[in-house]
Image 1 (cartoon, one colour):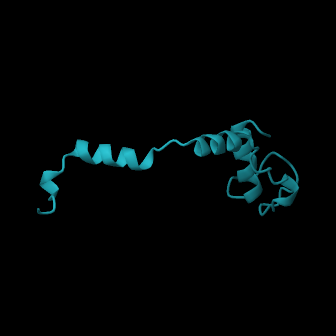
Image 2: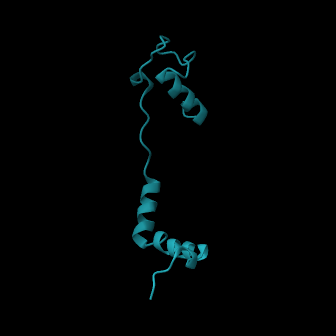
Length: 82
């Protein structure tokens, strides 16, 4: 019996095989996903620990986004966490 060639395998066959390989849902996976969902995320770094290279210091206004602190302030404002 010869090996199947690329022309012998249909896209549907490929989809079916890969879906069987990658989507096994076991009780252990379900429990791990539930546990990970209850965990909190990584805590935010305080703004005081993020260096300012633009010279505006501790203020929350006026930092350009090229300043590391300004970029963090911009991202936190956009996410609603500041």
